[in-house]
Image 1 (cartoon, protein in one colour):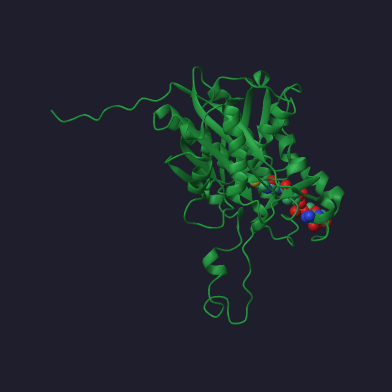
Image 2: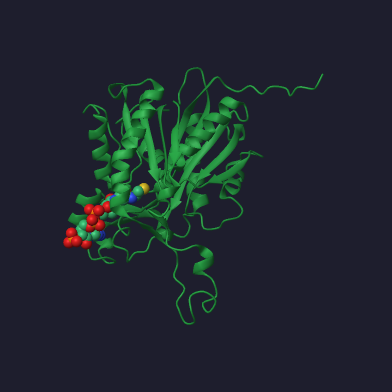
Length: 342
Ligand SMILES: CC(C)(COP(=O)(O)OP(=O)(O)OC[C@H]1O[C@@H](n2cnc3c(N)ncnc32)[C@H](O)[C@@H]1OP(=O)(O)O)[C@@H](O)C(=O)NCCC(=O)NCCS
């Protein structure tokens, strides 16, 4: 008889046990953005809903912000760092490609030899991480998994680009996912559309940017630091029309109706996108909606856990409430799920 592999058993269900965030100390109000681009405070507020954003200083590295945010999430979860059996870091703005920043973060947090790796799923990064963590906990490869969304988008912002200079911010948000008696993370509805890869992307690959000038760019041409560029209107339309459908699918998969939600926490991309989604979802007016973008800007992978922490801190939503989360962005990629708030 051929030998059989011993089956692995995991937790029956998973949930978020703790959430934490880190916001850089330097506040950039719209008035400062006006030093870089021809715009107005009123235009930025009405077109994006952003009043200010935070930009990280030299000490507020991707690792440092992650450690701060994760420390809070672990404390809230009431577990010891060594109980964490996986560290997933979602980021598109850690500028050193190898090794993954997750290993340094795991080591600094005291997570022992937990597997640690980075994922690149832009503004859907937290949802992708949550989907992986849920699978790891239920699949039996880890008891607790730390999911961190962290960005220093200021490093990839061209401050002379009128379509992006006012949007992006820096920060980190983290969640501890672990076992649960009842389902605390609904089916993650996620996907990608590579046919729209160019809609939000880095202006040039690093090898092009830093190739010897005479080899690629022609002698004498200045090396230009890569930045994020986007086709604002295309992203806007995709987010409003296609993502509202994805949010509905996540609700349906979880067997939850909009009126049963205690919070709607969409990716903080643009206030007008958030408002349009609320309308399309026909969200009852008593469901609180995360609008952290006003003070935080668009922090990509960090935006959902940062907004979640803030809603809980301010009492806009409470532990045990059901929240619909949805992230979407460069790839294009998306991920939505109904979760129980920690
Ligand atoms: C970026 C965004 C705010 C731009 O708004 P928009 O309404 O699409 O703006 P447009 O590019 O069509 O430009 C409209 C007008 O504003 C002007 N404009 C563009 N940028 C401006 C700025 N920063 N300040 C002032 N005016 C600006 C344009 O010149 C244009 O003027 P015109 O009508 O006289 O020609 C919007 O497209 C958006 O939010 N898209 C989604 C982006 C997003 O969420 N990305 C993150 C995804 S994860």
